[in-house]
Figure 1 (cartoon, one colour):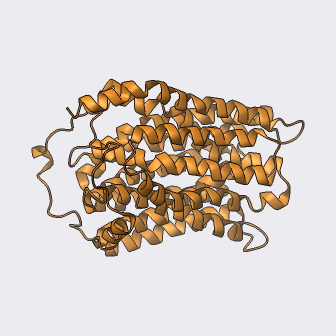
Figure 2: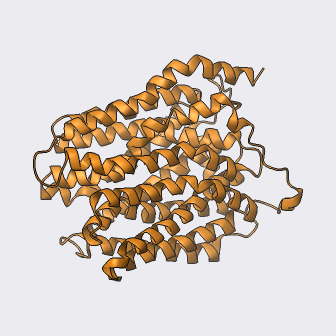
Figure 3: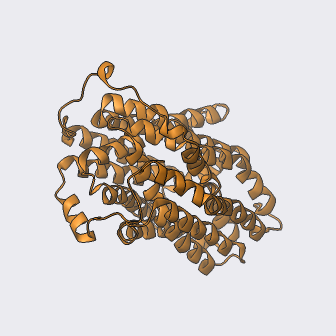
Length: 435
């Protein structure tokens, strides 16, 4: 694995220097982050309530609802491969425009599914979810490419950290507004009203993007596609690199449980007062990540990404044992905070690592391939999460959530153990590529 990042990195910029440098970046960098912010609101505003919407509003059975959501989130990661290639081919501006158009159609279509005949509800939902997956599959690599295009090498680490933090700022904003839109203490529009609001936000962002994003933000156009160097994926098929990205699969399942399991866990194991404030609890995660990512990025700038993976996965997996305790608001809050600190330690560094591997003009494609394990985690988790909920946290009857969360914590720890055991081998390969 060849990335010029070691414990002895000689001159990472100071925190204030990095922030000042990004603050003076061109308009395109901040317009990329504006899309990142509003799409964080819209995507997660729907995702956090999607299982509940499918089961409660569209009356799709639990196991199928979780499968539908898992299929969508899994396809997001899988479609980053062609989505990344599309972004590289048509450019960041056009890729974002295409993504936002698809996002509005998919999110608006999902909102409209509640009005279709019962026999067509599942088909309507699946079609809308597939369009939404295509939208995000194009958008994510386009955003990564946009950051790389608009930041210098010295500022790219903080640039990617802010990209991740600003996405989480969008989730915080959504989580605070959603209960007001959804519950009787506010507008009382229900979950469907939240979905409609998210579709409207996507449409407004599309209009703003088309009117403000400069056509040549990344500089003069590159050579014609036929003249460009063909993508070379040899680094991605290096044994050490493949082990590195796939060993993260077990701990990544915990992220999928945030929208596949946590909503029903809260609504079924806590009283109405807690359930009505469900988004407030989930807002803690993006808030901690939003604050923690830039700070931890600065504090750990000299620490190699592999060590950050080992530390971060231990924290993320260990946090899940807090849910293996009897359900209580205190345990839930502690879990969210500790889990979020683990995410802040390694998630943005992983994205930066993949982007630095990519040759010029191939960031989107490399990011797509690097996210294959994320596809597997999101795709497979939904095929058992509904069954586990029905078994250990049924809507009525005896519940054993502690057993379910213990199983999930043990699964996640496989990533930490695998990285710990393989660290000498992985670091040896990294050093060989720099001799």
